[in-house]
Image 1 (cartoon, helix red, strand yellow):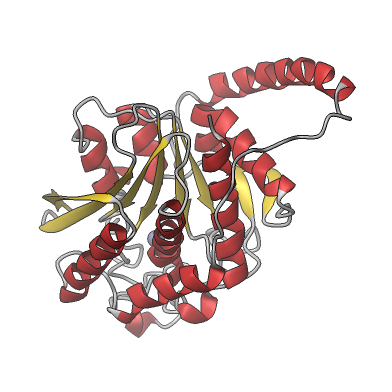
Image 2 (cartoon, rainbow, N blue to C red):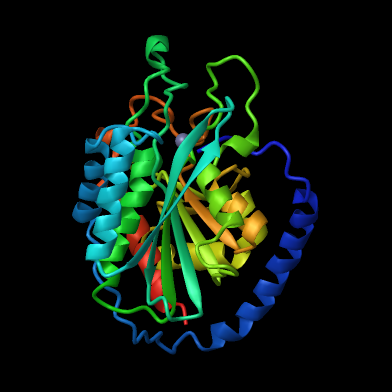
Length: 338
Ligand SMILES: [Zn+2]
């Protein structure tokens, strides 16, 4: 990721709808208050999510070197992740193709798709990107801006959490089928330190490809959750505007789950501006209502944190605690969805 989305034409309409929805929700909540003495009973056993294990999956990805599409590290990491998903009992497909990047060149793309309980027709889609950015266009050291970044958080963290979720899924089936997709070529957008103008369509090339060519014709999921930059220490996740526009109920569901688990300091009830990220194209092209769990750091101009698109995006910026908060929240959501 990414950049702020500059033109999102329906947002004004959306704001109006959002207000209406809030008032309806408030009405619906009244009867529930009368029954608050009734204890919530959950028959679902939610498996353990290990922050240590998730951290090790991020570390392993970074150990291959920057996963820049077309590089040896990229191929080796894709093979390792596919093997890992298979070892956890998933049905794995690697969708391969080539995509054209901002400078007109083509790069190879591998979207890694891991399916659990593929026979079930009701499904939930979990997503992250796994490629790392070929540039450090926001690094303070100008001489290092054309060197690819580790992408420990921007890329590695989301994929690491999904690998750990896959490890957990093998121990206990979910009520719905689960699809995990690691999108490729998300972060090959126009480098800010080069001359010229970036265009939104050059971000998220793997997810755009998949949304136009899903692994199963006519594929649909009840909802989607994208994880991006979910590993920084003390990360704060806000309710991003594209997510709220297309999938308000999913935002509510995820934030409520986090709150119940005591992760309110990570998942704050605060709105933030719309972003170009994989969920935008999944919403717009294939129409699966999808949200983005993505770090928001209001103290930085980018809002993504000072490490973003710099060489500081390395393993020293990855926290087991943050990975755990996100992983446990997502597990709670997918195990409780009926
Ligand atoms: Zn990025």
